[in-house]
Image (cartoon, rainbow, N blue to C red; front, side):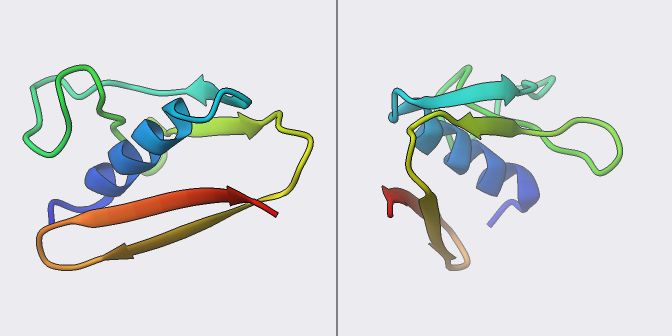
Length: 79
């Protein structure tokens, strides 16, 4: 696994699939990454850049995630 940016990029791609989740802050990497398609990454760096989104669904959401040494899986469900 590549670390925090792989997690934030995976979360970003899931958020993009849900119309009522609004991306508030997202930063691209300076170079292409291998774990998501071009322009689908979300860089994070403590105290500098972040990935933020807002829940406009009118429902609470729950984020489920798991990972292994090579991949990250995230799903978001309305509760």
